[in-house]
Image 1 (spheres, rainbow, N blue to C red):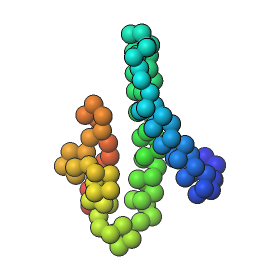
Image 2 (cartoon, rainbow, N blue to C red; image 1 turned 30 degrees about the vertical axis):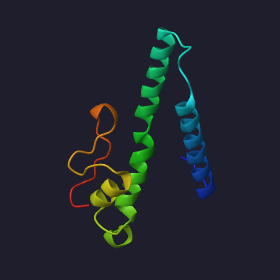
Image 3 (cartoon, rainbow, N blue to C red; image 1 turned 180 degrees about the vertical axis):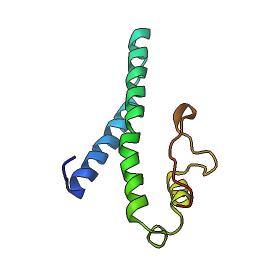
Length: 104
């Protein structure tokens, strides 16, 4: 992976947010059943790609950020920041969202 600037990372996430907002605002009434199924399949593909973005970010926090900088243990900080339960971190359809090594 090539090195990119903070600005490029922020711009990419801003673009993702904009696209997600646009998709949420769409009306799907005019679609056929096969079209709806195809779009749901594309949603699932997108959902499965998210961990490839999340995991490197979490791994870098594990490697580079201490409790003092984080303001607590990583698992607790992530649970609070991401608004997930520490006891049951789950994403869509009951899939695991985040797992942080014990003690971090």
